[in-house]
Length: 165
Image (tube, rainbow, N blue to C red; front, side, top):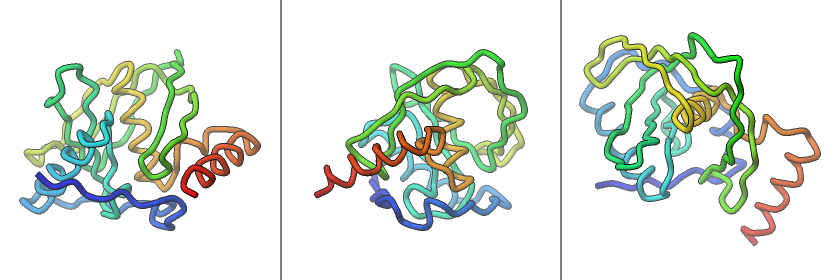
């Protein structure tokens, strides 16, 4: 069990687009396992590799109540998003102590490479849809607060910096 440290905002890697994964190897599987351990320790419902300084398009999502059902995704890409939106309180271990209500599509269909190295497709709904969209944003160098107005974003970042001391 390895819990990796999350990069502190404003580390420039959090604004950098991650590189595609060319093949699922034992090293990739080990990173996914560390990501799941890190996500569980937060506790959270998802984690992108860029959040821990690994600049590869890897994410894990687990919105189950039982836990232990994490979906491992490489190169996740949204194929379809529902018109219906869902509002959810989002946060990030990269900017601890603050959160914001963000509206995102309630359901998404995502294409990704699974842990067997096979291209897969899955529908995510509710909290898992929110989480997978949040992780894909991270992989594209975006933070959840980028969905806020400039004023709200600036207030959120100031509050987080004040908490950090």
